[in-house]
Image (cartoon, rainbow, N blue to C red; front, side, top):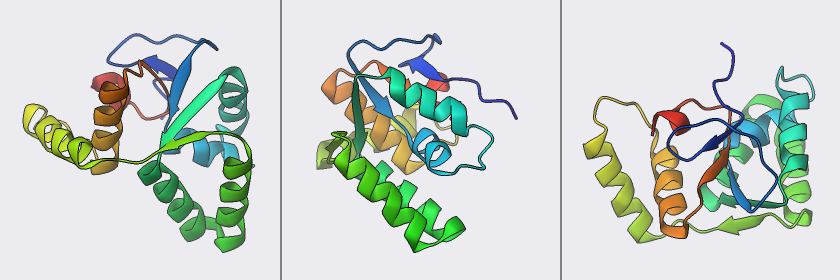
Length: 142
């Protein structure tokens, strides 16, 4: 399936921009880390276009675990080293974000948003982040 969004305005419209801070989802981190991923070049291009990248501790852990499960610890650790040295802002998910994630689940019961996606939406709302770099169509659906 072709990705429905590259960089999505939080909540709807697709666009590309290098201004301000943008949230980066695990789908982009994973694709950028895996050379043979079909979206590797696009993911790297997206990351280069963002001046200020932000992610959560849960997205970081999710990406590390996906890389470890599919390609081994060396690949996962290489991703972590590159991310750590890149100046990406890693924001912790707070109890308030977890509570908001539960509210999102109740409001969007017909959607299949993962807990990590819901905490990402909540954190973005809390911090006023309106852009997300993702290949995950759930971000546009929210």
